[in-house]
Length: 196
Image (cartoon, rainbow, N blue to C red; front, side):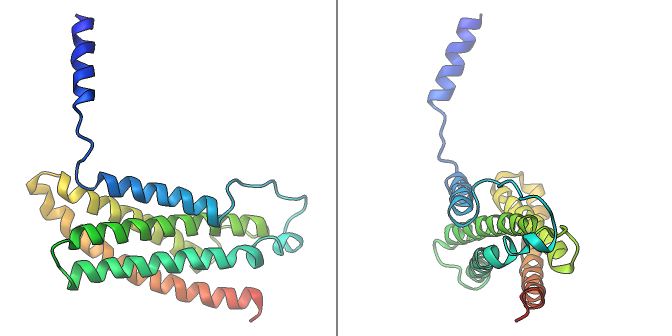
């Protein structure tokens, strides 16, 4: 009996169609996150030198903030572009373009948050102690949730689509507003920290 089961399982695996809509773009976004994290941020957490506080500050924020800003602003621009495509520019391939822009934007956001966490840790500063950091973590969780809802729209039963689709749309709008607010707080905080 087990030989028959294994043979059927092997046939199912061999005939498995991996071309389900969206899976290619999901894995592309996942790969983009890894590549951006490796290229633009530290690939691994380095051991912190002894001591903490002001002595380490020069190793964190002044060094890594440009990477954090670049990734986060790129992600924001891609998310807004994806929103504009979905809302105002529905052409024949709008869904594919929207999915690519949002996936890549989400990947940039996640990579930017990783760089931000590393930057604060290297500086010897405490985490989640100001509005920018708290809004940033909240926003990135909502970005991930919004992308997951968007990915699931075509994969849920029809009755659930009445809940998932409006949830995806409204969370997307909320995420863009929260990102803009978080960016404003980030610019204000950076100017205070760097004294510019």
